[in-house]
Image (tube, rainbow, N blue to C red; front, side):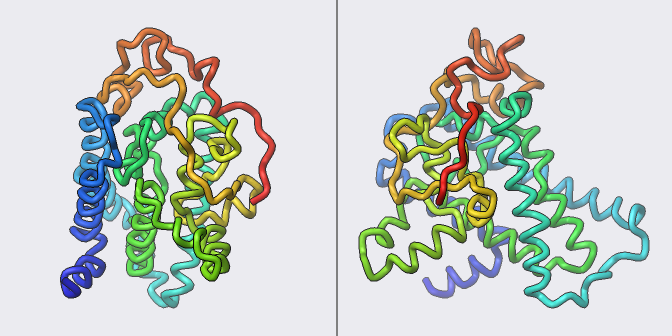
Length: 300
């Protein structure tokens, strides 16, 4: 068993991460954590969002990127190979995770962009599958794939792949319905660890709050907690809220169980649900949609 998990973490960039996600999903499913929410439409959407980017989009971007980059930046292959591993790690944290923070935040603050991110918030449940549940257009403009490919070409491949693996683990566990951080809040002697951890990385408590369908309870906070790997960005930019509690319900109030293909491929394919944000001539934002209302940043 130890050898299996050692091999799994050594191969996170290939078969390791999908295997880890599958194992986590089996645990969630066996514990009934998806309850009655995971119907056929939700299953098809989650499968499409999980498989197509990994099997089609990212391999194509990597393949063509490594073909095009030598033409755009001739002579720069492995130019930064001399950079020490931890400096490469820090460079990637800023180049990838900080830009992703702003990419994510803008999709909440700009009405036109909201519909490209809406799929990620539509599910009335949390689980490991939520980490990859995104509209294909949102995924295509996602910075991580392009940054990783570019850094591999420039000679920072090892730290880039390392950060990609660590980030995937953190974001998957933050979306999981298993509250693995709860013991840190329940045991007083672990509170110092909790204080540091919840301000450094995304945890179930902080990220579940981002997926709540209301902020009226003082726990949900879909207007902030935008951090992906690092919650530190929310601390620095004043968009973080830490309560050490979990929302009672998730999703968006205007969700109409839009067809999985419409959620995944909008605006290429649109929903037949009248009045939906994903329907032809649908509103950019439902009038009762809270995710884009003005808000005052909360202290962490």
